[in-house]
Image 1 (tube, one colour):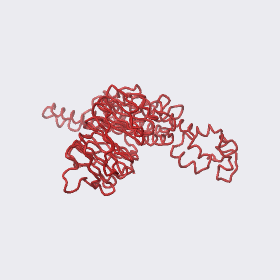
Image 2: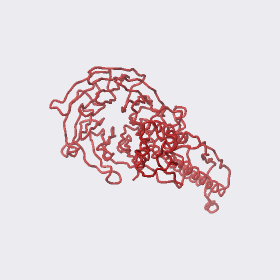
Image 3: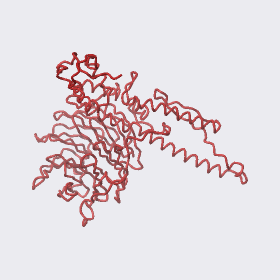
Image 4: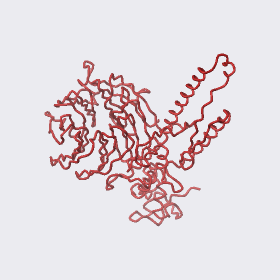
Amino acid sequence: MLVPLIPSSPQPAGHPSSADASPSPCAETNGLLSLPWEMVTHIASYLPAQCVSTVLPKVCQTLGYLETDTSSWRLRARRLIGSQAGFPVGPREDFDWPTACLEMEQLIICWKGRAQLLAGQAQKEEEESNQVRRQQQAGQDREPGEEGQDGGREAEVEGAGVVIEDGDGEMQPIEGEDQPETSREDLNERVENIVALIEEERDHRMLFGVNGEDGALNHQENLADPGNLGNGRQGEMEQSQPCRSPSPPPALECITIPTNHIASINSVLLVGGEGKVCTTASRDGNVKLWDLQAGSTGTLLHTLGGKNVLHAHRGWVWCLASRGSLLASGGFDSSVRLWDLQAGGAVGGLIRTDSAVLCLSCQTDVLLAGTLNKTITMWDTRAASPVVKSLCLHGNAVMCLAADDKYIISGSGDRTVAVYDRRADKVLKKLRLTSYLRSMSYSGSEVWAGDSNGMLRSFSMQAGTLETLSKFDVGHTAMVTGVHRSHGSLYTCSSDRTVKVHIPCAPPKTLCTLHHQFGVSGLSVDAGVFAVATGDVCVDVWRPRK
């Protein structure tokens, strides 16, 4: 039976009367809105965030107020993350709760089963490899003349137990050792059926926990990243999950761009909006633009620099930044080169520096470059004489930069973090850390940074005051080379050859870990599209499946 969404006399304080609130002419008083407003917000917190933001305002004006009701969004966030985690990590004033919840739900939908799927594939490949080795060994040990006696018999799989999950997410072993072949097949079939039932039940309650559970993410993190519960280095989560078949189509697809670079890719950047175009910068001195919507593995749009130019830079291209139609690349040839994306990547300018360029930040009115010789240089790219100012805030190379229209935040090899006020033209704060920052992401009132020891650090940034919040161990064992944080998502990559996807709470909840053959040098995220410089000459791009 459908409950009519009809407003009635009890309304939340300050809200319009039901006669004004609803476009419906019906005046029944036994609908959903006859309940206390607190109950309405609690019920709404179980609906998908997209529904609350886009559908309910069209039902009636009163339900449209749910989109601006902070308490409803906080309930939803707590259900997604769990009661033990802190969220947001930074200040709550002016925090965009609807956007955060929308992003978190989308992240969980896309990545919740990715770890299990990858783990199942890896385990299946390992089992097949082990079986081939055993068969080869059996063939070597078999005496001549025994081939006909045993040729029709498959080699037995030595007793590795099967692992399944019970209803509480605990791992339960079922020993399979010393069982007949037919019994083992029956057992495996039963296990697959049980797992399928558990998966079906869990998928129904995945986003919005039931029966008093904290919700989707707590349940998922127990499965995907048990090391997170103790905020310690996680184990190899992929090894604890069996291969499940059949399974629904994944929410994400991954394409690999064979970039034809002849040396490692140092930086990757999504440009143009909606994750349509990917820029790659390589140690071969070249910068390339790729159309991600054409072809199964992307299509090369331009190799920047022109046909008569051998390389975009005369050395390693180390970093990229963009704003609007402007793309900037910085290299070890002590230069920043500007490219016009609207003109097909045409040369837009050349800026000389006095040392290698290690990081870039592109703002609406200024381009910032951090260099090996300890300085941050500011250029107004619109002016005839572009240099604005050079800042010396550190005692070693400037490794990472983040900025907005008021402040510049920089991390250096001297293990300091500095905040510079662009308007007052002075340093506001300088913090000394135990390790230097290699990567940084700044949005809203939060700064997230990855350091040289594999730790993830969070800071609050309000009115020019930078305060250390926490230091997290998310499982990286080497330098964190890339960080991207938004209201409801957190991506990290490391030279330890892993990429991790998290919820940006305290401590971060890791949804998935992706393993690569080489150390990962950088990442970029735009509109749900996720590009990774895998440490060789290829780029992996993860995006929602169409």
